[in-house]
Length: 295
View: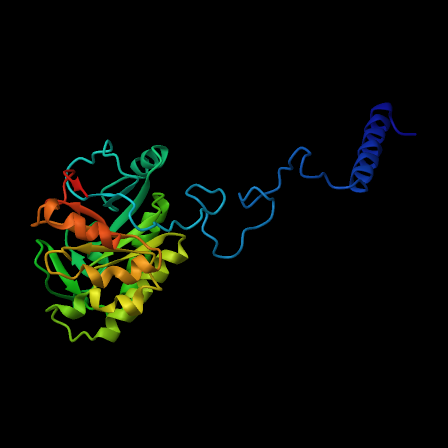
């Protein structure tokens, strides 16, 4: 005969086994029952999200990709202390300089945030500058500390730009403005062809879309007919000054915003015509501080 304390332990063990057997035979709890502690995908449905589906920063359900419509107002500021008081539903700001908290603040104010990132030019002042091999760095592009990149080297540039776009995604940005995507029209130090630019720009668009962000085509007017289907909006500088704004109409006809700025023309000289075209136009200073004059 077992000692009394052993019998008590045996009875407790038999009772536990009976409880487990009974629980396993019951129907699993429905959606309104107390949730289990099993790992979830954070989608709110209890089922894994689809492979590659972008989740919101810090987890949560995938965010719908933002598609800005023609005529939406915007603010573009890349220098100086960011002015969050500007009454515009879209902010285009520097992806490296601005923090996730700033993006969250914009979202709390009901605004969308575009991540400005140079993709076609090397910038010696960026924290990842040392990762760019010397053989992909070409001639200066007219801005201090910047040089054109050899966009034919997709094998080198794809992972570098992917990391930059990862940063934009992790900070919570809704979209990307990739700059310097018309090198084939400039003296880069490389023998770039139009086909090289198309391949590079489409790669850039895919990197953004793979991360759940929309992406804008910056300038590159001559390739708009080929690229309007790959990009979600456009960003243009000085099309009014050079009488080129009509080239932006494929984006407008596709229901996609064109964010446009002029630096040398006063707003009174271009707003009437760009408004008729459906562009989202601003007069800005060249260094892109907070000052703006919207059409």
